[in-house]
Image (cartoon, rainbow, N blue to C red):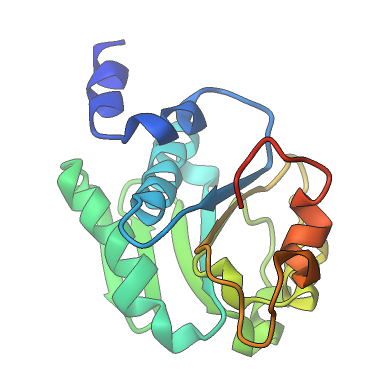
Length: 189
């Protein structure tokens, strides 16, 4: 109980609800730069790894694979270090992975520019999608229909900025708004 309370102190209050046990399999983290969404997404991934252990298979995803190392991968490694868990992992840059030294848990990296490599993953448990405002509806559909696990629901953490993608003038014309948020006005967008 005390460890859980200590962990909660490291998480921004607006994201603490993400760490409660729930049955939600897609979490949308929306906010401006420096809003804490990337850190909260990485924290959630590492926290869930500590709960699942050997069967954990997380995937760090961005539109372009070459942008993962200096962004979401570095963020997750720094969270592991901040939480004093670094000795439990081997981090490699080629391939770009974070692998547990005590069990088979792993965090892989994939870009949507290499969609064939995403389709070949078996039994992922988590997907952390960074800069989701850069992905297309087809990209996200590919993830939702390709990522399957034999026994559990996969948790998607979809992080995105408030800027509309290039070429989109109104939020009502953006696939993300139309498909996921147009039915409600409870959240600002």
